[in-house]
Amino acid sequence: MAGEKKQGLQLLDFWLSPFGQRCRIALDEKGLSYEYLEQDMANKGELLLRANPVHKKIPVLLHAGRPVCESLIIVQYLDEAFPATPPLLPAGDPYARAQARFWADYVDKKLYDCGTRLWKLKGDGHAQARTEMVEILRTLEGALGEGRFFGGEAFGFVDVALVPFTSWFLTYERFGDLSVEKECPKLVAWAKRCAERPSVAKNLYPPEKFYEFICGMKKRLGIE
Ligand code: GS8
Image (cartoon, rainbow, N blue to C red; front, side, top):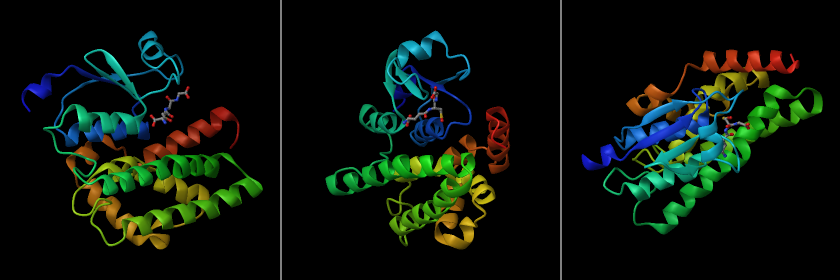
């Protein structure tokens, strides 16, 4: 593992990105050191455009100079490229791995988009996003079940995929006029357990900070 710590890992990222936070949490969970390269999202640099010419998005992991794009693919890559580090996907159980990928994909397909509609839209679109948000959070709480983490006892792939969005709960509450704690107490308890992990505590920002960022974004977009 000592050798793996010097593998030449760089992460092109943006401080508040939940997708970048997934990668940072995964790298820290695995004890892999890396160079963090903050990107200017308003003025994308040549390195980012070369590393991710298709989507032109962060995060991008550079491993010995070779780019890996898309946060969930990056996290899975880290599991495969550094097999001596603690696995995030359940090792040796294809069915459990498929389930974990299903829920991480659900977070990407549903939660991010619905959260964006919640703070961006007004009227019917907003009301629909609010209803959907409660459904999505309840569905995730159902998937968690009685477990400590989504994978059971061990913090794993689905936890990494979802935990950055716990910093958004406050923003969902303020724009959705809802209480995540009231709707989904087990999910909130899970978020608190996750926040106790050094990898999570180090890489997530206070929920107020994200809320302020979104308020600033609304101002810039003229949709206050
Ligand atoms: C999403 C990355 C993304 O949206 C992943 O990595 O999982 N599916 C991808 N990145 C955003 C910043 S975070 O909101 C981004 O780079 N946006 C720049 C742009 O759209 O121009």
